[in-house]
Image (cartoon, rainbow, N blue to C red; front, side, top):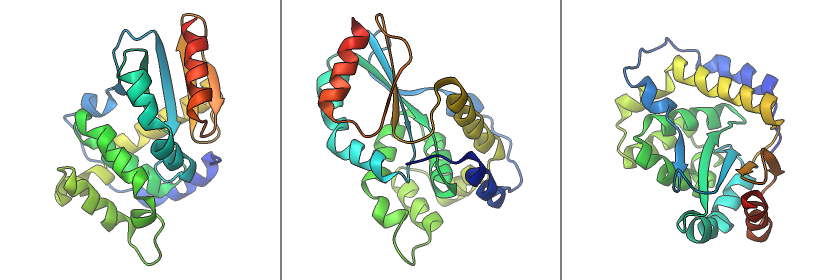
Length: 205
């Protein structure tokens, strides 16, 4: 899905609630990743929780990547929030509020159920997201604090802007491969496993 910085900033105004001081700022800023830190290749996925192509990739390709590349020590996989709209930004804020070990299962659940919480007619996305967060262990009062946290919101948007400038990210999903033989190779789109694994092999050298 295509990214429009102007469009996102215009809807972010609707989230401009009073800021809440966070004692756990370092916790939400910590990298969310799977795999060994010393894996020969690192891939960064830039994704949006309301991106249908990201959901397709998560459902059809990522399980094999995890099984054959991450769990075998060949790949370190880093998740990078790149929300394309207000709903995705809110969901990213909630995901970042959860303990790090719950991040990947939670975003996986959100991507698998987009039709229920993000796109269903007549559904309040905030309420549906709150229900999903409660299942992940985040009660409604903590959920409300998370989506009102302007420091967290601004941090996500700043990192998104930095990614756009550093790598030219303008759509989701997008992948950046780094290894001994390749630096900052970008692969856009919901690529299949064969293409992804080839890029990993090329990066490893």
